[in-house]
Length: 134
Image (cartoon, rainbow, N blue to C red; front, side, top):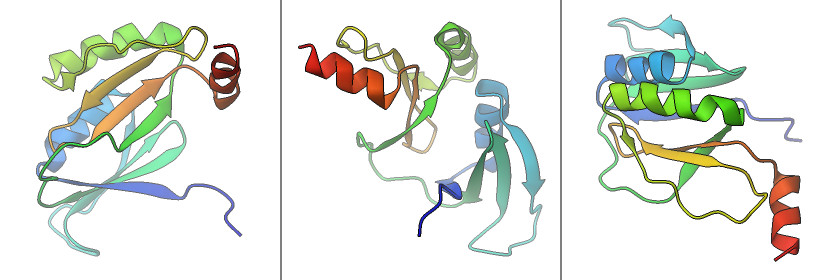
């Protein structure tokens, strides 16, 4: 039986640059670095982001961008501050997209290796209710 999410792993071309995005941009805490050792596929770093284990491993970036993404829950009053931090790190923050009233606010951005992330303020219940009211 599945009891929850264990961790997410991202293959990145530059561990330090991704570390800055996660720690300085999103407020994660770095909790482990393999240094020059390889215990799995490659050198790696682990982070805690809101109680979620994020693993990053050194490797080739994704060849192309898609809409496949990870969405993190965030308080609405934090989005603008996070946007400013990401822009300082030269992360590509996408323009806001049109939303249905009540479904929550989102901030989408690509990391340096073509992974798409979303910061979202709404809940599943809010989204379903907003769709039902259309």
